[in-house]
Length: 391
Ligand SMILES: Cc1cc2nc3c(=O)[nH]c(=O)nc-3n(C[C@H](O)[C@H](O)[C@H](O)COP(=O)(O)OP(=O)(O)OC[C@H]3O[C@@H](n4cnc5c(N)ncnc54)[C@H](O)[C@@H]3O)c2cc1C
Image (cartoon, rainbow, N blue to C red; front, side):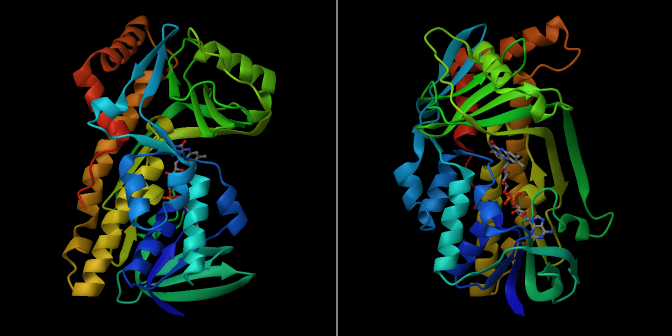
């Protein structure tokens, strides 16, 4: 079997790339290790930058997003027991974010690809990629117990942080930049309406807490917890009691409801450079990870895919490979700004073991600055609503 672009991974990066290539008349095959059901149920991101929303609408997959997505014009920071709203729309010159779960984007993209006759091979685990620096790279994958190959002109490694594409690049080519944070997030889904329209970021002596939502009836809530905690040690009562304590502010009532999912996630900042080697390009989490504090992971993947899809279009339509050759440089320029934003928010909002009183004062001074100084607020709002795309 042959194709023009072999895509490893049916997460948001791989699916959007395949969809954009189809619209540009370029063939692709997506190979995904997990089942369709698993991929469509996997709970992850939910806050979309304005540019991400515009990209999905322009690509013809934004109909349900426009109907069901919840537009947010601000964000609430809580510290010292008080709520401080940042007017993101006003401070960013009219831009907003939209809450629409990653699961829904993945469903919309899969439905579009399947509807257009696209090929997504689910339950097919890629084992390795041969000849990345030759003319015809070959993706080797396992499906139903037997091995298969896909020969391609190019490979897009959209297989997330734990995928195989990054490791297929010869040693010594990539430079890795990494920071692991000494805490984790306990994330829950609860069948309870969110207690506030806005997403809430709370700085508290017990640790960070966040209230977000997946729909008007389902809340997504997070608590900072020790890295070695197990979700089973967190009873529902303990979770609600910590959430009440950390999110408390005058006039706010947290709504409780049945907890339907509970999971603990570690946090890291991670970037590899360059994001391409031979005929393979890395996109999304395969090339970079951010701590989830700024809600940037999915949005960063969309930024990469825009550049990569435009590069393939220029190559296949006009025979020019200039944009493909510059893919890594263009994508990384935006990624490092996104990494800076996510890492600085993470550092400002969490308790680190051994923090001294001075460090805590600095965190509070940073929070006071972005919530009271319009210039600092503008920088925050522009990053939160999404930095511009170069391509
Ligand atoms: C637990 C968790 C919670 C998160 N929460 C948030 C959040 O609240 N906000 C936010 O902005 N971001 C969040 N993120 C980050 C965000 O979800 C990711 O940045 C986003 O999914 C990146 O998309 P992607 O397509 O690059 O990678 P992924 O979504 O990881 O997709 C990669 C795909 O490749 C497949 N794959 C892997 N290996 C192979 C293989 N060998 N063969 C074939 N297929 C393979 C995987 O099964 C997967 O479907 C979270 C991430 C995780 C892991």
